[in-house]
Image 1: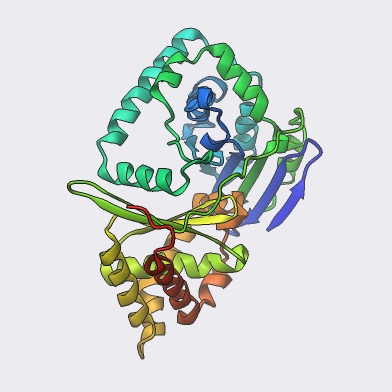
Image 2: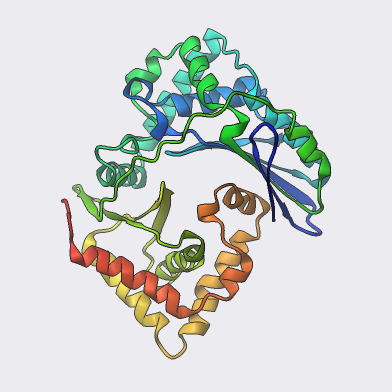
Length: 356
């Protein structure tokens, strides 16, 4: 994997995928809901919609490939999978996100209505409500507290001028990472991306203190979440990834993880005691006589299948905190995976600063 900083400040990552007929291109701009002031909540997500519609002409690249976009608490990512020989064309197309954004009032109104519909769909999903309640409680009092969808009143009051100001503040090459996963080296990529220029980017916000754990419950649903400081992020990605897969295989409980700043959020849509039982059951399975074979069959192989996808590889390479190599996965033994589960269980059972 080749990493370089281009003259305009853009971080370029090129990952070879020999023989692949497809290429994936991801542009990650380091601005998300955590960078919004109270009167901007929802602007990063709205901007994602408008960039796709206005700057990327609806998201079409080449002969029909569609750009997918996602806004999170720390960043906004634009990705596209194309035929290998269209990779440079895809890079050229994504570079338009840095161009001066022109938003007609009627287009803004249409996207405001679309976000209202999206919010209604999300609020109808129990899993989404649990996640947002957990993360909101986990990061209460910080910039990461409010949902990416933002405040409906703020979104409704946005004007083209305010959106343009937000775009000018954050959308610069120096505040972005471009990742290209392709079957062969593409020297034209660096030449194209080097032409992207812009003002120095503002510092990224990282004011998210730790909340050991929090819980939320309703009439029919419950969830639990906690966060911890990763001492060695680069060395912990593979065991964490396999730990999530192993818990699902052993108990059916889906564990989710999300890096925010220097912290790792962990949560599950289940109550505290079932979560502890799931972690214990999985750890016991890993430490049994055939634990290594079970880990390989139930966790490693399903993970490798997903990680082989070119877009998944590009998305992970855009954020080093989530990057995990095939070698790291193949060499991961049951012991470090069990250690992750033990750490998670101890964090919950200690109950420090627990909140109902």
